[in-house]
Image 1 (cartoon, rainbow, N blue to C red):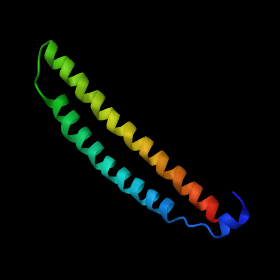
Image 2 (image 1 turned 60 degrees about the vertical axis):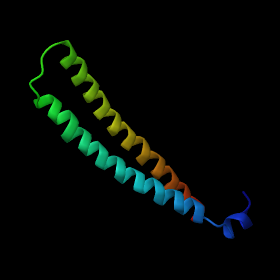
Image 3 (image 1 turned 90 degrees about the vertical axis):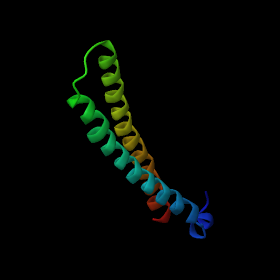
Amino acid sequence: MDLDALRNGNFKDLDAAITDWDQMVHKLERLQSHAEEGLDGKSRRANWAGVNATVTREFITKTSREFKQAVTEATSIRNILRDTCAELLG
């Protein structure tokens, strides 16, 4: 990218992407909270027994962890976009 392109660049699309990813991070954080407190918390407190109970509990715990990973990945993408925008504007 040449200097004139940076000086006259329109970064509205990049700003919009940052806003979208920021909103996604917040939505995923809420889902993560619901998964940890609701699903996983209830499954740990449940009085289940048998093979199906073990499989179900493991699945719920794994799903809850996947929401946490999704938050981490979305936050990383948002931060990369923020850093890129800051570098280009700087």
